Image 1 (cartoon, helix red, strand yellow):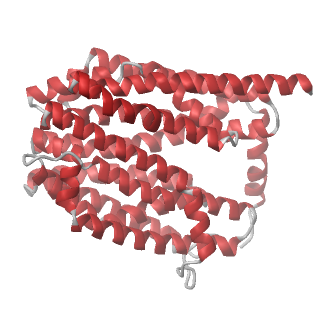
Image 2 (cartoon, one colour):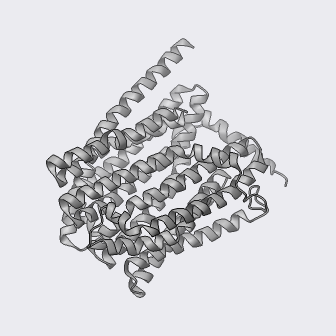
Image 3 (cartoon, one colour):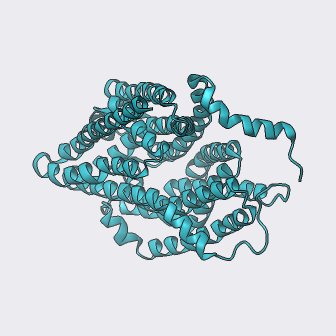
Length: 460
């Protein structure tokens, strides 16, 4: 297979452009596709909540919120395989080790199948005790179970879809990965009302729509990876697990696994605290507020993905002025996004909540919770960009530490202590307080890093 000379020129010139092209232009070029993919992913989750809330009822929203920890746990295992294997694939492609790259793709299929089946089977075997532990009550267990049983039956499809999307990005098809994500949103949006309203299947219909949307996207991904014209494609002999590929993939994917696992613990504590001090509707209120704020968070994550290669390249080239500039621009953009979330959450939370439900009490509780949730959001954008910045310049340990400060060091202790004194309000207060404290730590770490830049520049 011959390389197109124009493609080679473009491939060679793209990295060097990171060192001299306008930072604003580079950030726009790299961030916009990532933002589109991230917001599509966020809308994917939001669509289910809206149709379930409007079509099934307020307690169904609470039942759906109970399933969040299961979703986070599933995502943790998915990220461990997907992120780890896709990173390893990028390295092997860079080394032109195409044989190992082919085996990585085959191993991802096998590994996702094994983990998907085991995880789904174990969860299904103990579904009721697990959901009760996660905060379900006798009023919401039926909704949570009906939804999760179908999602877990399709767990292999979910793992495979997410894993292959990561492989698409790493094998040089970021746009196709974006199309797969957008496609699932569109298909899910079409199928949700069909199964919920037309077929009168309630919350189970929403789950079926979700699995079917992922199944259709997975078929398209498999079609791409079975095309023999592709440099990396599925072939016989690559599906047998290789110890080195598996251990390296899981080792690289351990960081996102631990972060998702931490998120799982946090959501369990939030649900249990709200159940104890506020009841079922309080959990539904968190489900609504969380979906809305997550939309803005995903935009910032898209900005971070755009910043990462620019900051990394210029840090490696010791062009610290350009590193500083891309960091500043990303912080400004992220702060604009999270400040917009703050204004929306403080000024019109009732209007946002009404998109999910017509129940007046749930609207009231969701609006109240949202005001707490977004209270320190103007500085959350800065914190998120700082975490990603350290990852971009190869300071992975600092990045992981900052990621865990909000959840492990601040949020979990606050969730255990504050509700003892302030009840339901204590649960809601824990989240903005952890945002504030972790942002202060992030600011201090960033200040230290730039002092090091300045010292190194002066010594040159």
